[in-house]
Image 1 (cartoon, rainbow, N blue to C red):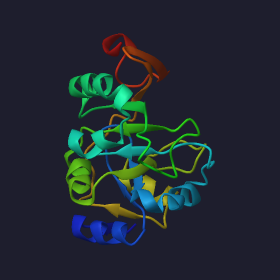
Image 2: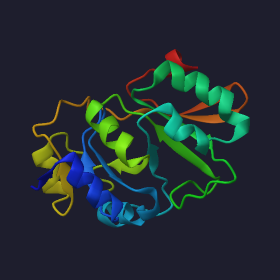
Image 3: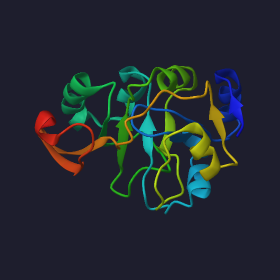
Image 4: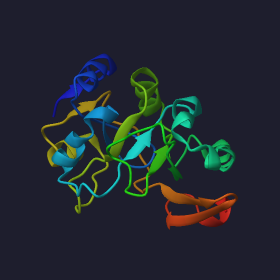
Length: 193
């Protein structure tokens, strides 16, 4: 298990390496968006499955959101971020990401984890996924995650703060004022819609 500092993590991310870090829900693997292929390789993830764009603050992610969905996005984000909610939203036509869905939508999240937000404040938004081999259970502590994905460095300090172990709730924008539940997680859908 190789544990690295935030400075080392920043350097690795800038040259296209992924790192694993804690969040409020599950440990995440992340990389700079332009290097997102590495996450698919490491996780053995189906390339048809989108990744999540994780930000540190609202201003880092708002420019990805299509203007039609912007007001609804802002209302929900203001109520639940930082926190365990992923918002799937149409991407602005001027943005091009190789890990968005075929419908040109993108899941965006700001975690309620000071460690994650501190890193992402420095790096800018990261392409992320849960830190596990696709199809297998996600481990929750640094040692177990390192055993699952031994080739990827972990952001310290370790031991990590305890995560909830429950994935984020995912909602998808349908049209003005209308959302669809994709996956219920920590936040009950009745509190969101």
